[in-house]
Image (cartoon, rainbow, N blue to C red; front, top):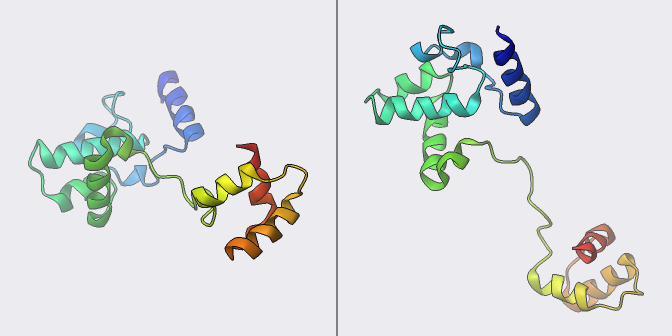
Length: 145
């Protein structure tokens, strides 16, 4: 492995963009003779998989298998690419994205609430008024926004 390839791999690892099945990538572009094509580069492999199907006319199953993905994964990746372009090739962050109960109405109420009330006290007020149970830490974070 060249110094440039090693540096690229470290960067991919730091960003969480290493292909989980790099050893399963058998597409000719990633045979190791062309340093530009790195089987460990998840985003590049996804792109080349889609390109192999759309441009080269390769069947979905074959394109997916040669790039270390399943047919189901191919369709998910293709849909994400259609929806978001290159950003769709990046994996979505796992887990919830923010509090689920904190509606814009509640956020406005929290912002306008008496700042001398603690998060726990405000949680009680919100529970009584809106019938929603919020943790004091959720309220404290909402106040800092």
